Amino acid sequence: MDTTVHRFEAAPGPLDNPLKGWCSYTNSEIFLPYSMVFRYASWRELEPTEGDYKFADWERKTWDDDPKTTGKHVVFRVYIDYPGLAPGLPEWLKAKGVKTTPYVAKELEGYDPGAAKGESPDYESPVFIAALEKLIAALGARYDKNPRVAFIELGLLGFWGEWHTWPIEKLFAGSAPAQKRVIAAFKAAFPNKKLMARYAKDEPGKHSWLGFHDDYFPEDTGEEQSWHFLRGMRESGRLENWRTAGIGGEMIPNAAEKWVGTEEGLARTKAMIKAAHFSWVGPYSPAMEKRSKLDPVFRSRCEELIRQMGYQFQLTELTLPKAVRRGATVPLTLRGTNTGVAPFYYPWQVQVALLTADGSVAETVPLSRFDVRRWQPGAFVGADAPRFSVPKGQYRLALGIIDPWTKRPAIRFANRITTTKEGWNVLAPLTVSA
Image (cartoon, rainbow, N blue to C red):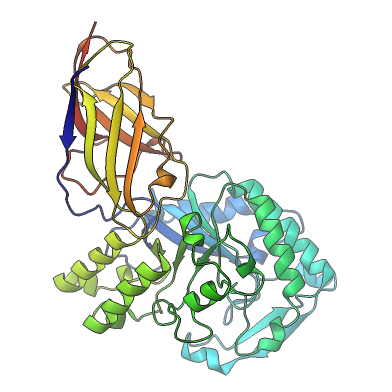
């Protein structure tokens, strides 16, 4: 069987590939391409009455009714104690005896004006912990197999759901049993979804399957201080978690001018994306800064960061027969490089399609031997032998990585190749004989 090696020209990668890049709030303008949005929800909002979950109402209000979320995947976090906001603990739990401690933390004003006051729940309360476990089970039943959900942050405990109560650390001092049970509940409820914890220390630092999010990126991402993100990951032995669990987090709010707009800041940002293997940045991100629209240099830097984050698949060559008989196997080998800093984390199905001259899809076949999760940074190769049953004729072979939410090809490549309006990446001609 005569084969041909088709080689592909490299090109800048897409700016809005799924499950990577900017993951912003939508309560302000977003000036750069994005594929994900970030959502908070309070426990009180989701379960105002015991056992009566208002997930559909929350989704309708924050996922569906906001035009900026149309067609976007979702990352979310549930909180109980968000300094400066109304308490997130449901009233029915207070009625069952769960106590709260009012606090004033003036140090927080420097991060978020008006954020000094709040109510911290009793993390040692058996009633509180048991109710948390039921909430997590309900969240899992609703969202573990929801293909629109990209990542879920554990949240719930501590200020903002970040598993600390600095600067009033005594509020969280007795939380170790709650931490352990919350993580166990999440693992049981979400066997399919990628989960992320704020820090790789204490109980979260014990788990090789867990992802992490750094919400003071990039200043505190390194290893210089004991509280820094990567320092905690190293000390907990979690530096390799990124290979199977996502890493992301929030840029310091309103600080993109420093961390993208200056040479020194940009260098730090790029270094920390690489060192921590970040896939996404949000909810605050440079995409929310108008300068990214008005300043070509600033925008170019933002685009450089997007292409560095997460995966970026660049195809190098495809080995394929020149012609095949209808119904016969088509041995093909695809080679490429993941030029990003992380893999793709979900088993999205890889398919090939045969396209007719007018671009319509004549047939699609899954490549069951391909697993995009194995396309780690560096070179990758995939081989399979699909069969096509189309009539004889001239076709174009195209590749698609299927988003289970839209059921359409979604991932594009860092190559100068044609992508159809349906999302198929056209790779090579193929003749089918009778």
